[in-house]
Length: 231
Ligand code: SF4
Image (spheres, rainbow, N blue to C red):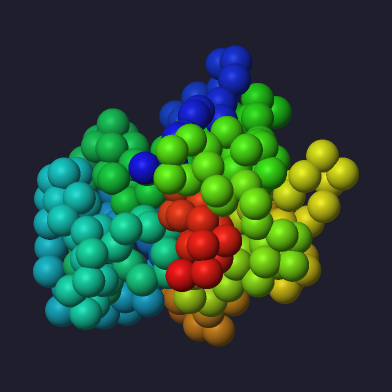
């Protein structure tokens, strides 16, 4: 697999304070709606807010199975892809359980957001990520700028690719990730769900925590390699 390293540095703002700020009533994280009900937390798919025939789960670990496959039963290799299945409701009674469940749904995203909020998040240039690959992925660094425009524009797009907001630049000149992505794709204030053309829930959340991308993921590196290899 492509080599990967942490994008965090220093001590981030705590995840607890991030959740506390967002959770006065309800908030969105990716395709998930989190609602506070008295002392409990209720999680569901954003598109299921008004559904009454949802399957109820009560353990944070149930999020692992819920997030594993899409509606068609295909394995979700990219957890921030906009294909979280519907039909479930997860009821949790403690804040640690809520944190665990959200981390199963979107691994590492709350920690990255907390680091970004406290200005402690380090991003990595795409060219740097590609240059440090080894073995069969080393060839990915030979990708041209034109090919990057196409690969990133297709693979990372919010409407069908990935719901993360891209924070990394392409190279040391500060070049945008792709000329084929809208500028909203790099705006943490923009709710990427809107790119799907279906807002998700009938009542606006009090807050939306963006899913941030601090460096190109292994799957994008693999796509770059494929393009260079002409596969
Ligand atoms: S590089 Fe980032 S935005 Fe692109 S698919 Fe991977 S995780 Fe998503």
